[in-house]
Length: 362
Image (cartoon, rainbow, N blue to C red; front, side):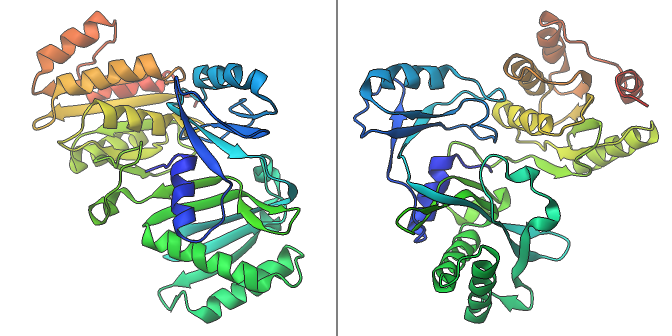
């Protein structure tokens, strides 16, 4: 589950991490703000700054026009329902700091870079500081946080700040674990002119499977779909229902000489919202040339899958070609819906794969 920036920062604040003074703007609000102010589009994707989704407004005269423009701006097929208005920070330096789960080792790792901001991904990988904060054998003891603070202060060239950084890492770790996060990224971590650390931006992802432990009321919803990345550089995405059919579909893609990017079992409780969310996740893979949909409906219904396909085609401008095999419950209704939109259904999985192969470079 991907949180919007303002949602993530609310969690950070509750964990003792400093964030900018802020307020939320809904459409048609009469905003009462102090200038200069930073307006940020609240969409669940990166690249907002480069896309024009973050704007500084210096006076009231240009405020409403900027608000209107941001609400109309689509970023990677997302259009905001709210904006975040924040104080403009007096920035001395911008750093990068994150916590992430290293799945192969079941460790929580801290990553840092001395230069944060929109170009952080262009820094060489070996220039990042990485350290284990906790693992099966060391679960966030004070000694670990003290060592992390010292290493971070040395790496960031901030002598005398190790105790402050120790507290920051400890609060981030507790926030990460308490909220069942899988990613917590502060970029930039701003060091202000008055020598305070402030979370200038925050990206946070939570574990959907832990939803039963929380009363989450975020814009994004925990999905019931079982979505697993197999190869982020894969060329074909797969959607199926039932773990067995989903695995067989992945294997069939491989047998046809293509590279499956994911495993996706939509289960029996999927709806248009969760399926469209799955399509959006698929479009985040950089090399997808085709999406193979293989559904034999029982508890799930073909017409619900068809409605999700139609919605995805209308809402996602960069959706790759779809190769669809449907059978089972409400097939006739699904076929009628897709026919009205000129979206073809193929008779077998083999036909889908053969057609997809034509789209995928060998």
